[in-house]
Amino acid sequence: MNLKGKHFLTTDDWTREELDVVFQRAAELKEQFYKEEPHLHLPWKTLFMIFFEQSTRTRNSMEAGMTQLGGHAHDLTADKMQLSHGESAKDTAIILSRMGHGIASRNCFYGIGKDYLAEMAKHSTKPVMSLQDDIYHPFQGLADLMTIFEKFGTNTKGLKVTVWAYADTHSKPLSVPQTQALLFPRYGIDLTIANPKEFPLSQDIIERAEKNAEVGGGSLNFTNDMDEAFEGAHIVIPKNWGGFGHYSVQDYLDNEDQCKVEMKENLEKYHDWICDRRRINLADKDVKLMHALPADRGHEVTDEVIDDENISVVFDEAENRLHTAKAIMSLTM
Ligand code: CP
Image 1: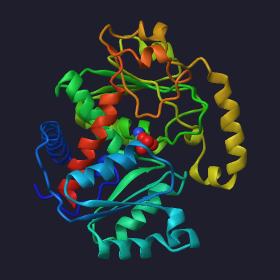
Image 2 (image 1 turned 180 degrees about the vertical axis):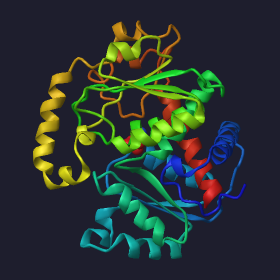
Image 3 (image 1 turned 90 degrees about the vertical axis):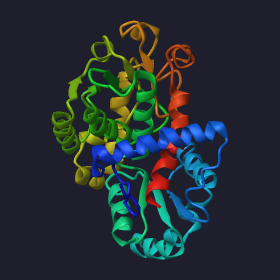
Image 4 (image 1 turned 90 degrees about the horizontal axis):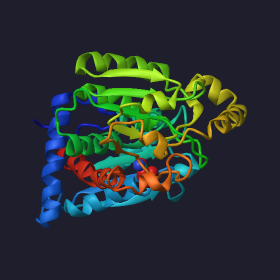
């Protein structure tokens, strides 16, 4: 299967067969990494990474990954570039794709990020990869699923997974849970989205995720009760996201300051949405805790739970960001 040149903006643009090739490549690369065998799929190649926001896992999995594949990644931020003086996504993409072999960007501004990346992809002659936008976080979705395969096997039918928790760090994008909602049911997983009513996912994503579930054999369930979601769950992902889905994109952009105040007021009602020992005890006896990280310890999840090595697989999941990033880059660039 030839995936060279294919953009990676959302897992929804990739078929099951294509994604299975990615997981196969990621597993091979992980083995080679552990054996310290060279795996120079991209000698001398250049990836340009443009971050509009902070990142630990994404930045370092991509940059380390490029080095390990024999190439190099430029770690760029918008303030280092003429983007900060208004140079367009189109011109930036044309120019960088003439100088290197791939472009990757994180732009999570609500109502802007996904379209910004799509504009780059339209004009780039080299693959464009999303390092997270306002709607999707495809690399995180791959690492999540790879971790699930490792812990539960590739027959994921009937696995029950559940998400949402309180956090007070910042209004996290919808992109992680939305990617999970789109991707997990394609692999037969039963996903329960538990969230307070003011923190829904976007309706159009839910509709697409339901179609994906029909095809993939998984299911999507919704509840406003965190305890109910934990009951019998095999995987819990206590992950906060902001209340963006409560508004239409246009309403949010037109009334951004007011929406932010409302989102904060709504959030304060849900301090008790935490993954603690009591809730873990509601789940399956072999339950695993996953989280894209950074975790808001003491709010999303207690230290006792996230540090429990019998339950928590968050660091395996973070490491798999490296192997899945290398798989996508080595196949597309
Ligand atoms: N999970 C994730 O995307 O982490 P970073 O924000 O640190 O890249």
